[in-house]
Amino acid sequence: MGSNGNIYQDVIESGGEYGVKSTNIEGRSCLRLCVSAGGRHGMTSNSAVHELLECPVCLSMMHPPIHQCPNGHTICVVCKSKVQNVCPICRQELGNIRCLALEKVAESIELPCKYHYLGCQDIFPYQSRLRHEENCKFRGYNCPYAGTECFVTGDIPFLVAHLKADHNVDMHDGSTFNHRYVKPNPHEIENATWMLTIFYCYGYQFCLHFEAFHLGMAPVYMAFLRFMGDENDASKFSYSLEVGANGRKLKWQGVPRSIRDSHKTVRDSLDGLIITRNIALFFSGGDRRQLKLKVAGRIWREQS
Image (cartoon, rainbow, N blue to C red; front, side, top):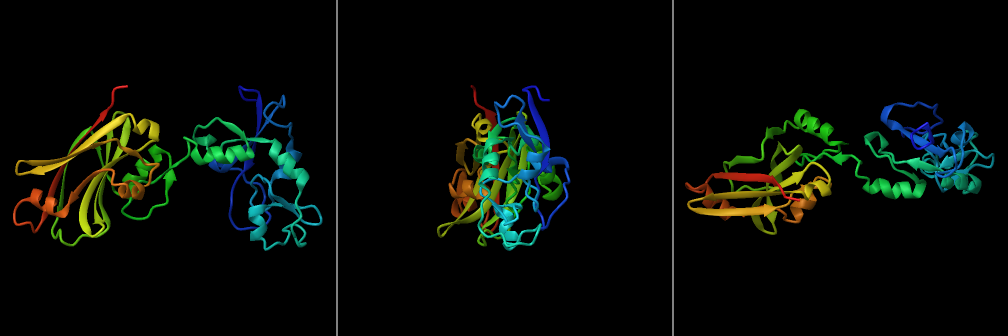
């Protein structure tokens, strides 16, 4: 019994190959069927209701539309296509029969957010739950590494460890930095990320990106900062980046973008320090045959 008087029953939420599966509850794949003892947050339930709402193929909670075969066996709409319209229990053709009574039961039950294991305590009717989960502040983040396509997601501590172990990203402490970027032949420019560096300061991690790409027909270099956290926390900080030489200086000041915004979104919005190749070579000095850019930066917390 939780502190709010709700009774929780663990229900598996998993995918995989289709076929009737036995229940296997483990770790983070579980969701909870929440039913209020007093009925204020949903209908009273027991194991029989739980079993009625569990898809026999994926073992997830079914929600409208719920289909059934002529013998009354039900299946979720996602798995109906996977089993080629054949009931996995009795092998009868499923057709397009809807189980309206069970759909009403599903609509009356409230469920916790699927990110409850990451700290979300909210509970919703099914459709409201789906809308909430799209923007839940506890949902996992995508890996911010842009050098190769990476589909890893997780919370911030997990991603920090992942970046260090799997992408060999440099990690630094401090809110100020100086980085030198060198390229032997700057006339060969490709759409590629050159470097990602992580800075830890003020209790948060910041991602410094530096890359080369074409802006229209013009080759450019771009540096920008992303914040490893949500938009609200990102807005509490500012940063500056600058390059210079020969008594000249080019400076950018802005607000770090949350890693909720993809790397491509930030780059395509040109939200960072942009340096054309000619200016970059001017700052590099020498015979202009080698790029030698020093990017200095600072991160600070804005006064509230």
